[in-house]
Image (cartoon, rainbow over all chains, first blue to last red; front, side, top):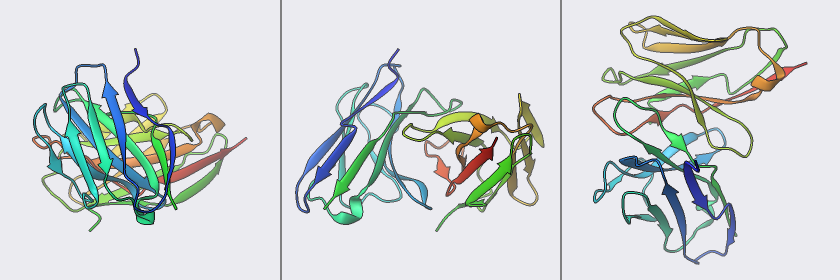
Length: 112
Length: 112
């Protein structure tokens, strides 16, 4: 029972490079989320997908794009990485309104 | 604008002590208040949650106290153990909505 799987676990990018963070869940959850975690700032929502085929902006969407490829997969793309995007990125999923989130183990991204 | 304010940022207690972590919220539409526990290198995991129709909820050594009029809620850990050392996040959500808003996090250290 894998839960929420994120790849890669670590990544170093140069400023201006692009990359896609992958997230997949095997729990048949409807909603999926991307958060970033920075020291002293908690977890801030980047984008979310309430159901397959829909995506919406969160608190800090600038510089990111997302794709809900199917019910299982929700990817986060950085088109032109900036040092301010250095962070730990977490993907999460949720079955429905009365359930908590299940988080992946995170991707630690450094932009130099 | 941080809609959920959490304090303290860090907390050190001795084994057996009762650490208390506090959160305050602004949005009166919030009606679901979970706490998440995060160990180093892992994603947050749901610990306990409360809805505003009750003033207290206990699960094992963990208790949430909720004060609706003050728009505050807190986490108490009874008989704390070194294994409780982790970062704790409070959060809030409108049930009809999809998004969790997190506090800044509290790094708890329980010394042996």
